[in-house]
Length: 78
Image 1: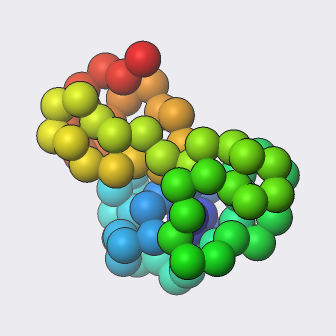
Image 2: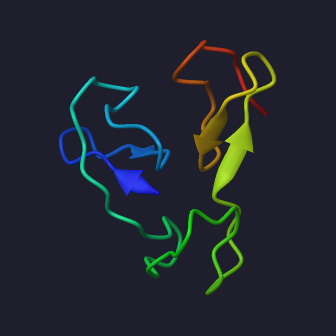
């Protein structure tokens, strides 16, 4: 996962711009739960087992963490 240095949101590896604030981002690969370094774009943290992505039910995009709303299509998520 990457973390936007401007707004602090966690964003997908494959995004070069933060979908929350539009800032261009650089890769920082870490687990948002335990801060362990991640390798090879995993779906779960190998250190703590944290689920790293949610699939949006509206647009089907892979979203980091467990947000309440999709940053792409604004679908409310469980």
